[in-house]
Length: 471
Ligand SMILES: C[S@@+](CC[C@H](N)C(=O)[O-])C[C@H]1O[C@@H](n2cnc3c(N)ncnc32)[C@H](O)[C@@H]1O
Image (cartoon, rainbow, N blue to C red):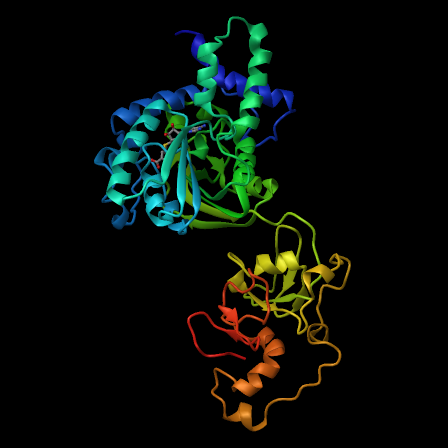
């Protein structure tokens, strides 16, 4: 047996070099920090080069996709489905979607149809054979759809700024002749990342991935999550289907080339995966799917498919706009990633940014939004005072001078579901707070108005899809 296979290939050396220069990576190993004696990148490349040429049953998980989207996809791509979930369900029309480890391109071609001609889809993969298959299928899919909105790029998903085809071009013209030239190569990589990034920062609405993160070398997984965060726009989302494990993976399993390249022993421990997302700055992190039946069980460790969703966009200052939310329950209290504690039934004061976040997915169904009677113009908002009493007194929302009285015949004769128009217009602000989630408070911010439809001209809110005003 040769000693050479344990050496990383040149591309890995470039990345390792970069990491060591910037300081030690966060320790995310699933178990003891034993160095891997296999080259994870090499075993993955070899396995997926083979799997691009010939379907490999051991890499296939049974996943049912919406058959409407499969008709335009060439059979050889359908046959090379090595995913373990279906994150395409999270794509919205008009989205710019990035698929990490796009393989033969199946998920990209499904996403392309949901995103539609106004959207676009970029698949990134490291494997030349997979890229070749996906690129040749892209023309056929575009012909069948009548529009072309998918492209495939060569890169490592833990380094989404570096375009490997540009780097290949550079290396062809400037082959390395000695270790002394390494520094110049690193400079070139930095310049390529800066001037011609494979994926620019803040450019993507939705990052999807299907059974790939586990294949990224252990020490590069935190960098991978940070890269995903970098490329997303504010308000962007992730929907990642991957294999996770319920216990730490011992070193000897991580050094098993077959288990590693087979999407097993590189799996992140499920709680670590969520912690990495939190550390990178994501919010609303949710285990949306969790397969009860494991994909594999090895030495008693269960490896299963999950789909995780999360959002980007909580960065930035907090301003006071007089807003509050009421947590509906059923838990007596909940806490978000930033330490905001919501007590069931309590009007909790929040800053304008948190209010908008809570009025959007994935929180909106759990809270009632309470905005003040008198909106605070954006230009007049002061910094939110985090030391204030967390409770927002109803009087704070309504205003000290609020003395309205309603009821009597109008309310008594109105339907149980809706107030009369006269009662509604006067009382809408205060009663919106106590209303169901299908009714927003008037004048709420854009995110806040998402679950409902609009505030009408009299600032009563109109539930989505309804012509009735609600109180
Ligand atoms: C299990 S397959 C999944 C392919 C595809 N997502 C699917 O659902 O069929 C893993 C894919 O990820 C690619 N891959 C593995 N590690 C990668 C990395 N670090 N950067 C980019 N692509 C990678 C492989 O080349 C392969 O095409």
